[in-house]
Length: 236
Ligand code: ATP
Image 1 (cartoon, rainbow, N blue to C red):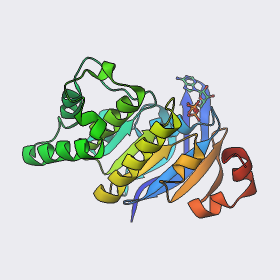
Image 2: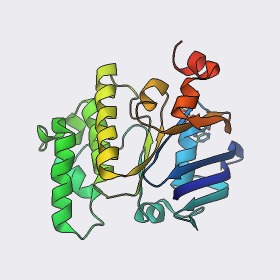
Image 3: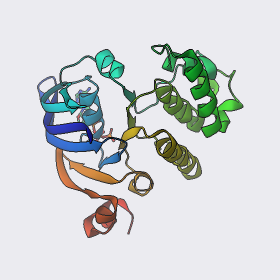
Image 4: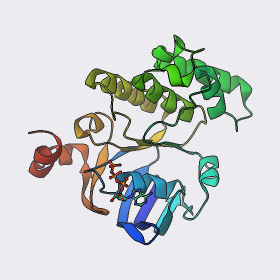
């Protein structure tokens, strides 16, 4: 079943149109990547879904149009957005950040169980449960941002550049945790990633954006086999 579908989505900042008609589909429980160079419109695509930028075209979630919805309304439908730069609350502790993630939920027992689960998936956070968000390393902040989004119990996670600024080994650890989260929880994911090698360890399919358009779309296996992908994104 299709969970999220974008058809001919446009977006502008003021008078500057940045997306020229993006299409993509995220199946229920699937993981889809958005690749492309700086400025191609990857972040803006996620912001269009989250209601953070003016959009045209069609955006449906579970078969209903969500285009033009406010970010709060989109979040309440079960779409959690982990922005580039993470957006953890530096003045709150790790535990408080996780509680903030779950603030709309009423199922207290399940919230407590999900908190334990997050700390199992991200053991680094367990050791720092009383530390302020601002005191964490970049990798730990990224893990906290993902864990906080998971605490909202979303159907779809929008993840923007989870590897940005991290050492390669840390980025790999973050992606291993995300992959486990995906396999065990069944949350669908739409991830923006510059590092295609990392993205391909997680996603089933991806679309490559160029100047606000889909340049290439395919399964991970198809894309890995394409010369232009190998040259531009896989360093070979
Ligand atoms: P990056 O990896 O650099 O984030 P990206 O593919 O995510 O790249 P976007 O951030 O979506 O690209 O930006 C697409 C275009 O929109 C760029 O040309 C950028 O300069 C422009 N842009 C982004 N944010 C704004 C804004 N708030 N106001 C005006 N233009 C913007």
